[in-house]
Length: 286
Ligand SMILES: [Zn+2]
View 1 (tube, protein in one colour):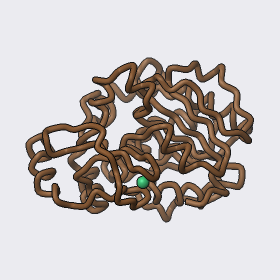
View 2: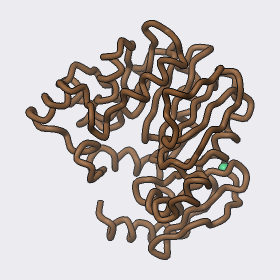
View 3: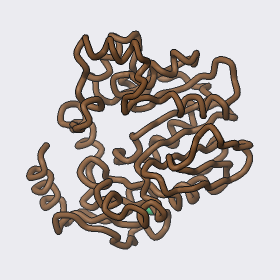
């Protein structure tokens, strides 16, 4: 799907409603604009930033089977056998998909010998592989059948049906997934059903928070659009997790220095380009 097709699709969908895709509120404020017809809007009720025109769930399902491409050589390009061998041997060290720091950080918060995790939006399994190497019990889910199939090459069984996931997990992990979703609430309720009572949802995504926008306005403008219909910010997460403990921060922080008691609501520095939100959502009413 090139930019021209995206523009045509945006024009075709221009007259569709601007209701918030999370809470359904009809009121929003335009905060950014691209190609005249696409806007980034802030819901006045839940503070989600979302693109208009929106995509349907059906479009999304089809798009991620075949058309999704990222130009970082690793997200959507499946590695050849040689490169795959190198990635495996190094446990992804030094690549854009090195999750060592994140996994160690979450392990410290969970504080269990062999925690259970669901890697939601597992792509071809590189994060699941690293969790497994760190002695986690891993279940993986990916919308794209082609990428899911590739997981077997590195010994990762990736489900493409949500009904295959088994409940009772400590962590519902999703990195760079939520910004693509046409229905965020579906993911929250799925996570809620699959987590055990002390379990945590762990979300990583591009940072739409004000302190990042002030520091890097051009990057803020670049990080929403065709493949990112949602742009997440701290206000939205504080809002949806208002009744439960949460920790919100960004990659400006050294993860290994962060301590959290899993009982309080904490917001840390938000000036980095990657936002994270961790919450104990079992008792939240979505
Ligand atoms: Zn809303």
